[in-house]
Length: 198
Image (cartoon, rainbow, N blue to C red; front, side, top):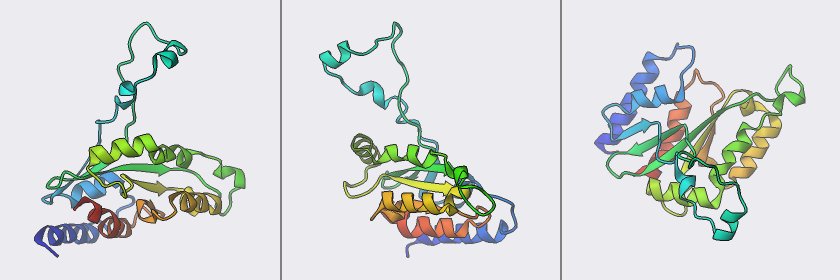
């Protein structure tokens, strides 16, 4: 394990010790602290907020859709976060989805939210190509990591759906069931996501 890896591990172990009793940790806050003085950074990405403006349509297609009087100046996506290796410039994009679910004491209809379905846009061929290119990641890598929080992480239907959707890419999602416990989340990053950024 190199010095950068040792520094990162020491950071999160120190963080774990100091914050063990804290009520709840947010994703950004956890990684922002452990990435201090390392080659990694977490940020709020803005590089995709205009990506759809550059999608060319045929003249025929363009003639059949509404064209507003004022040009559209912003149309794209905003992933919640990006984690970048400042040395390799490789980047993975993060979606954090908190959603209700069907758990003890609730009815099945309490799991009717669709935040997890909306996150599936990242699986589309066009966005995969754009995110891989911008993130400098290979064709065999999913360029995103989705973190699920809340009751959805224990809902028997949603957990099965998400597990099916990600199929062989199980490393690219994480059920953060207890946000008071950040060590398993960081370990997941270290084991599965960090190697993609090296």
